[in-house]
Amino acid sequence: MAAGSGLGLWALGLAVLLLPVLSHGPPGAAERRCFCQVTGHLDDCTCDVETIDAFNNYKLFPRLNELLGSDYFRYYKVNLQKPCPFWNDNSHCGIRDCAVKPCPSDKVPDGIRSSSYKYSEEANNLAEECEEAKRLGAVDGSLSKETQQAVLQWTWHDDSSDSFCEADDIYSPDAEYVDLLLNPERYTGYKGPDAWKIWNSIYEENCFKPQNVKRPLASGRGQTFYKWLKGVCVEKRAFYKLISGLHASINIHLSARYLLQDTWSEKKWGPNVTEFQQRFDEVITRGEGPRRLKNLYFLYLIELRALSKVLPFFERPGFQLYTGNKSHDAEMKNQLLEILHLAKSFPLHFDENSLFAGNKKEAAKLKEEFKLHFKNISKIMDCVGCFKCRLWGKLQTQGLGTALKILFSEKLIENIPESGPSYGFQLTRQEIVALFNAFGRISTSVRELENFRNMLRNMR
Image (cartoon, rainbow, N blue to C red):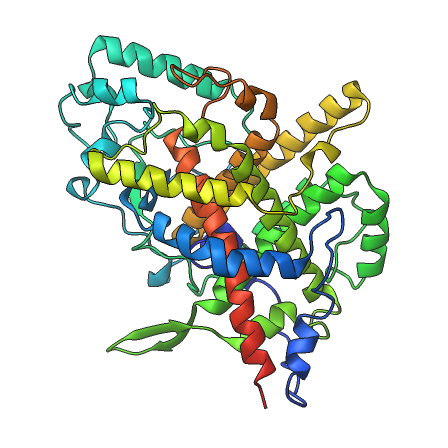
């Protein structure tokens, strides 16, 4: 896979069979094939692709990209040493581009290292009284007894939240901070049976699909699959589209930051149109490519809706993006709120009230199944052999899981007090960083589609 989604997802993307590239044909023919039917309204939504493109590419993407370069959002703590819980596989990618470079302890801002679980003003004031952690992320040993008790209380409330992901234990000695800007999502060379096994497990075992219904390209039964998909409830259909959209996003990242040159003197990454066609050209993918791209837009709408819904949590005066640099933290919070208000202003939001809206007992059961399936997928990320792919896979699945947690906690968010702790709904720093970086990856994918569309249109 590659960096960002590069993680297991990256790997998964690379596993797609490399089919021969079509002849280019007349100018614009390749562009029409890849983007065939990727226009107009999206299934199960009131929105259209053109509205998303204009909103994302020219309004939201530039601001979000700047925010993600700040200290609060660039450092993500992750445990890349967890064993795969589903099969015995100790093999790891030996390619050097699969490696992840963790941050030396003195490179991570003190405020981040000493307050991974503290995001309120009161908690940050307590943190300033504590001595600097002896090791990276070793928060507990440096805190007063009073603060340790507060941390345990916050953690308990976090753990009791409506979580959709299997989160890392950030207290583990194996958990390390990673600078996401220095470990970007891109092509790593990780592919083959091991990579394919990841995606196969996700689709075949975790998308509510019966064994006798084969997914597209698995055995040439795409029409049977979509006939089945059309007949299932909107929630199960949405689950599949979210996973497909994430897969598509990863493949776009891989194609946009492909290793074009690898010599002793330098490496060069850039857009690879052929790679993009192999994954999205209508003919090469037997009609699948345009569907995948539409699912990417569906995923975009889901995560955008979550950002618009979580605004009250971040608007509270006591909330800080705490790094220890007071003026910078205040500036970043203002920037964050501008982005959230912009997300809220989007005119054609996805209506999440259409999900789990039937019989209350059946809806509750289905929602629990939804959570269990998604938690399972988050665990599969620990089976990805490429560490850089694993990093971005874990981050993006946690980000999507956090978005789902937000959407299904609307009433709790509405009741958040302006001051004091918010025990009904809470987000850890890990969830916040994952939420915005995951959406940043989706936003980047939508932006990259415009670049590929222009390149394909100009092909001769």
